[in-house]
Length: 195
Length: 195
DNA sequence: GTACCAGGCTTAGAAAATCTCAGTCTCTTT
DNA sequence: AAAGAGACTGAGATTTTCTAAGCCTGGTAC
Image (cartoon, rainbow over all chains, first blue to last red; front, side):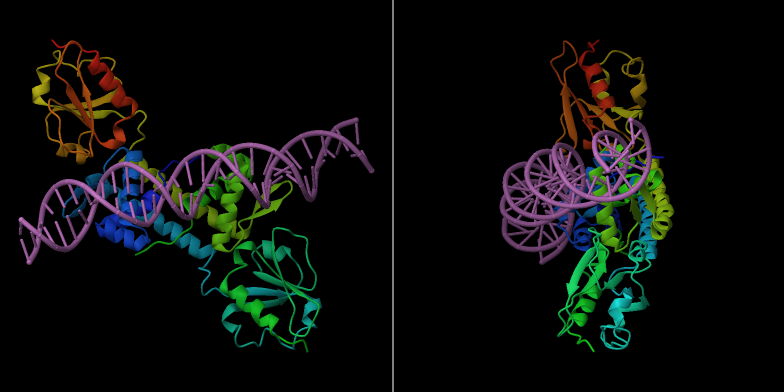
């Protein structure tokens, strides 16, 4: 079971160009120059050995093959898009679930961050745990630990809450370390005074 | 209607690794090193913000998300593969349809190349025409013309049949110029004596 | 317990793919 | 006839991806 199909960049360029019937418009949508789209489509056509567009001075026209190809490509893109959105909703607007080490709970103001208004848009759930496994399982997005871990491949960020010399460690999967949500939480934590 | 999904290379690496539950085996299938697969998958995970695999010393395990993602990705790959094969059967083993310029017909041995045994596996159909449009429409894969064209973006290859000083021009879409079939035809033509 | 093996990870640098830019061409519009 | 729109090309810059070599961990054989 090994799949063979042309490069995705080429297909993306084809799909956009076919929708607009214009390399220029497709380029604008994809955020590149028209030359790039032109080259991608040409590479795709070469790899398939057929022409997908008729190039007329007044614009583009799909060939019979191009017209036959487009709906399937769009459908495949739909599947990819839907599947991706299902397993990993866009990071923007995604609320994180946070784990709180029992040892950390005592060092924070009562109810923080559960009752923090500013963090409300970024947090979906708070659990008390220090189980790093939960992060690898995607059951938890981040963990506030009292101690360092030696799990090198997790992202680890030390924060000292205001007026406190003992750091707290903010642990996430690498992919989440730099997102808006993580930064907001770390910043809020840094400016929080211990009780 | 603009689609958003992660890089195809990453998805390919994920799909293969998930099938084998091994980066090494996936790498062998994809013809790259295990490090490359590891990097692709990591990039994919970062772009999604979730983990797809548990890395255990004894191998890989899919996370819940990874397991949920895999079937959809495979399905999308199926769609791409089928659609591609439908519009452009693999160049290997594909027979070309050739157009013969009426002016060329008289300069070739009677029935050539229709009756050429060696070209039989490469030619599907022969028509007498000099209409270049047919090439752009994919109705014709190649054209043997008596004269040069000035269609710069078509591939043009001059051949002088044995003992003949007047060249014949072999015209194809760029994507077909270098394939086995084209080369076989050009070579056969070059060694063919005029009648 | 120690050596060895397998498989995954990391990093730097090499290699390849892709993009931009500037200029050209063709056809359409004024 | 001149100007405009849109596509093409080639060179060079940029970005992405790959390889190579060495590290780390856990399992297995002695």
